[in-house]
Image 1: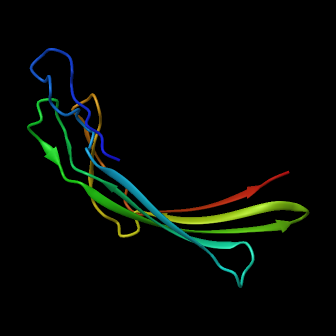
Image 2 (image 1 turned 45 degrees about the vertical axis):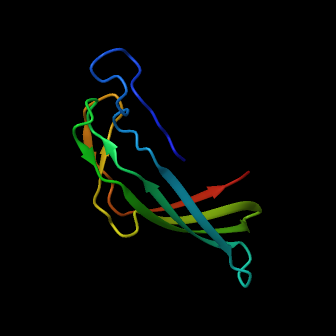
Length: 123
């Protein structure tokens, strides 16, 4: 996605790029079902976010990043109900990065590698 967010209010920042808003963002995802194990799938996702400004005056910029996520899903019937178990790892390579918040001159450190396991039962 290409986004060209600019300040339009007639002040010193008019025409500048909106803080915390990168021009380029992209997501690519691949998912593969494992035919030898019914209900099992694996996925790989790449999330790209371009550089963005930290301030409305566009004097300070943080770099872009690409974060990789992997996941698995297993769907089955258990105890007479459809169930799904998921396991995901976000920020697989534990990349250090900064995020800029839109409309505030605030920075925060992005999340490190995070593992999540979830279980869903449908009644």
